[in-house]
Amino acid sequence: MDWHDVADLPFASALTPHAGGLAAHTDYDCEHFDQLSLDDPHAASSHFIECAFTGVSVQGGRLAKASLRDVLMRDVRLVATGLGESRWAGVTVAESVAAGAELFGAELHRVTFRGCKLDSVNFRGASLTEVTFAGCELRDVDFAGATLARAAFPGSRLARTDFTGVTMQATDLRGAELGIIIGPDSLRGAIVSTGQLVYLAPVLAKTMGITVEG
Image (cartoon, rainbow, N blue to C red; front, side):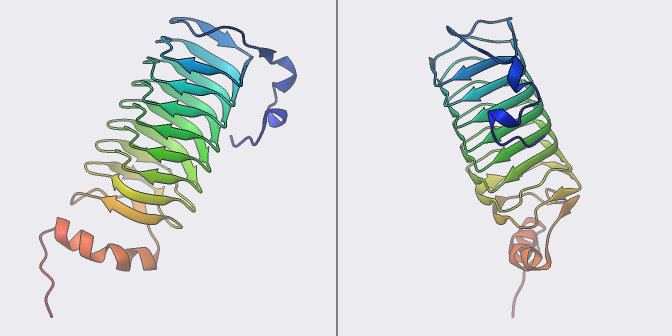
């Protein structure tokens, strides 16, 4: 799903304004979180179903093992927020910023990041299936040990992005600017353009222990 605004949501008419903070082990169904500042929220294992977040800032907090299904995040800031082992399905994140966020071991399925800035985000050991980073900037993002299946990075810029130990399946890197850290098998299962392959050749040679002279 790739929603652009709240009006595009099929459940837009059912949304109700959210009041107050967040709590652990709580179900949030068809709620609109709008223009909120949430400092250090404790909402581990909570469920967000058919919700929208617009103009929301989250500083710190623990949302480990939270579940997000059919959710729109637009103009959202996640700073040092713990989302380890969370589950995301049918989520769109648009024009948002994540800095120092923890998503290690998370499961993301049919998620779109569009026009986002991700800085030092931890996806270590995460599972990303049909996840698209469109027109995003990824800086010091850590995918080490993650699994990427049918993921794509069109129009995105990757700087010091760590793909060490990644397992890829039909992951499309075409159209991305690749400043990546890789191991010998990191790009097995990736789709790249001819130009990208030429650019990556020295990096691939180094990881395979090949010395190029002359």
